[in-house]
Structures are given as C-alpha cells and as structure tokens.
Amino acid sequence: MNVPPPVVTVDLSLGERIGQHYILINQIGAGAFGAIFSVKYEHGNIKKKLAVKFEEGLGQIAFLHNEIVVLKSLAGTKHFAKYYQQGIHKKYRYVVMELLGPSLIEVVNRQKPYKFTLSQVLKFGIQGIESLSSIHAQGFVHRDVKPGNFVIGNTVETSGIFYLIDFGLCKRLQIKDGIVTKPPQNGNFRGTMRYASIQAHKMEELGRNDDLMSLFYVMIEFYVGKLPWKKCIDSKKTFVKVIYSQINFQSSSQKLKDTQQV
Image 1 (cartoon, helix red, strand yellow):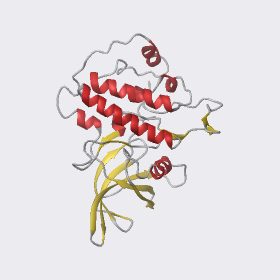
Image 2 (cartoon, one colour):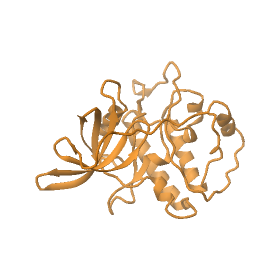
Image 3 (cartoon, rainbow, N blue to C red):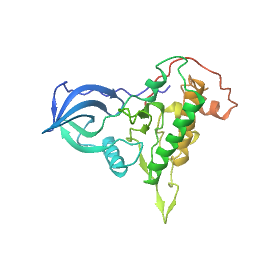
C-alpha cells in the first residue's frame, strides 16, 4: 500500500519578519516538501501581499532549488507566478513569489455537482496545454501535473487565468543537437499516483507526453467528477491493470480531494 508522505510543518510564527521587508500573515498551503505563507511586503511607500515558500534543510539538495530555477527561466511568461527573491531564514530556505488565488480543487468544490461544464473544462485544457508548452520550451518536464498544482489569479484581471505551480519535481530534458533524447536508464516513481501516466507507474523516465497525459486525466476528473481508478492503492499492480483495461467513466457528484506527490 502506498502511504502518502507527511505534510511539512514549519516552526514559524504569524507576524514574524522574514528578511528585511516581509511579515508573515498566514499559512496558505503545505505539502510533502514545503509550506507556503502569504506575507506583507513593506518597503518605503510600497505595500503589497506576496507568497513565500519555505523548505527545511540547508545541507541537502533542495526541491526549492528546482522551484527557483524554473520560476527564473519562466520570468514574464503567462501562467506562471512572478519570482521576486530567495533567501535563508533560520533553518529554512525560502523563495518569494507572486501571491496567486485558490487552487482548482477549491474552485470546483465551491458548489454541487463539484465538477466543471464542458466549456469550463475546455478553457482550462487550453490554458493547461499553454502552460505545459511554455515549461517544455524551457527544457523542463513538470512530472506532477494534478488539480492542486493549478490555481487561478488573485485579482479581478487574472481570475480567469490558470497558473501552473509547484516545480519541486521538475527535471531538465536531455537534449542533444536540438533533439530530446531518452535517458539510458529508468528512474523511480515520481508524481501523484492518481494522475501519473502509465510510464510513471512502470518506473520509466518521464517526458513531455507524460505531463500531457496527466493533464488529460485532470480534465476527465473535472468533467466527470472522478477517475475510474480513484480507489486503487497499489501503484505497482492494480493501478496499471485498471488503466490498461476497458474504462467506464461514470459520473460523480462527490467533492474532489487533493493528493500528495511521491
């Protein structure tokens, strides 16, 4: 049985000052590798709300490093949060970025039947493909495409824009002479079991097509309300068999739940 990894907790207090200009307001999210807070930025006459993501552990390879590299490479690109700065506070690395709105899980769960209309799914799908196209063009594979990693903007002007977040599991594509090459050996499972591609469950190294397949699963769940393999718990046996078998997409009116990466 796959046991979800524990959610990160951080020893920080609301109102605590981070660096010279940031004051913690409240925690807005947490996952297996980091916790996110909204902060108040104050510098002279400039005041605004931003987001800060923390990761514990200064002496090891950090998932937050991936986050920073990807955000910097996508600066000025639609569908991605604006990067501000990085630093160290106590025993945590942190990165400051644009504060975005709620995740699509929160949006879809606002009212019954807890799913999107066809037009809403298609709008999301188009923007989801645009975001993956942008990150792939920069030479990265996301490797954890799921509903909780898409959010909407935090202003009236950006409320109709979908943003892709959480780049801790991103990996650079191997490119030689302008052609993407397959790694010589397979890797470990990466991603979130429910939305992972068949290749991910077969422990194969992931590529751009796997991100797109995960997006396709997300779109199905948003439109139908659930995925056929929702209750499968053994990623090495039952899960792959269900994906390969003939699938009956029955409608559901249950709320969606966030899932964690591995």
